[in-house]
Image 1 (cartoon, rainbow, N blue to C red):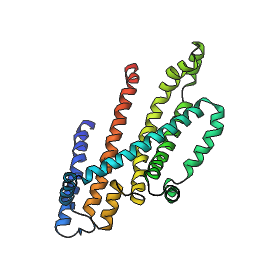
Image 2: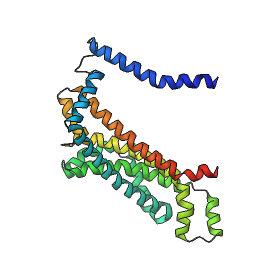
Image 3: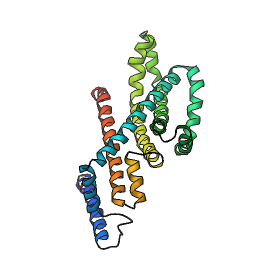
Image 4: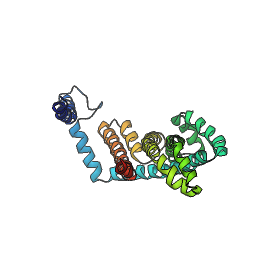
Amino acid sequence: MRTDRAPVSGELRWLSPLILLVVWQLASVTGILPEDRLAAPSQIVQNGYDLLVNGDLLDALWVSLRRALLGFALGAAVAISAGLAVGFSRIGDAAIDPLMQMVRTIPLFGLVPLFIIWFGISELPKILLVALGVAVPLYLNLVGALRSVDSDLYDVADTLRLTPRERLRHVLLPGALPGTLIGLRQALGFAWLALIVAEQINASSGLGYMINNARDAQETDTVVVGLIAYAILGLLTDAIVRRMERRALRWREEAA
């Protein structure tokens, strides 16, 4: 039964989006779906090609990618530093964790007006918003992973009289790595979500700015091109982390 159903399921993965595109195109051509509501797939492809050729799309992609990478690097540095301090020290736990839990409950996008007041429309508020979106999920997963390390491993470390550095390298980091990588993937998702909002509200360049201008001009084809570009960037960065995850956790498969 399972062998019969598997090929059908695989075909449906490609067939259903294709049917959707055909119906979408027909609805646009026949006028059922007005162009000012949603452009036809063929028009979106043509517009994407034009934006790519004239360089507008590549410029916007580069600006958004740079913001995402800077925000991610800053947020990851904060999350890892705070997570290690909480995981290794009771004082760090008491001092840092309550603050991070408070930040976790604050609606991220509710901070946008304050960021505009504090930092204007420069690059800094957009990068900080991305960093905040990255720091919280990565911190929570890192701390959870450190706290879930098997206690028997600590007993083994005590028996072997490992130094703190050896304990970190051979016990804590390998034990916490799977949960940390999950947090890394979640953080990347939040990074792109935060960037989309930041660029549409407070930007003069980038994909969000391009989408915002297209919305004002009712150019739905450009809006969709921008959304597809965001999706592609998100998928590419997620694929990179997934590859890192497979390579970093290869030892688990070999041990199994």
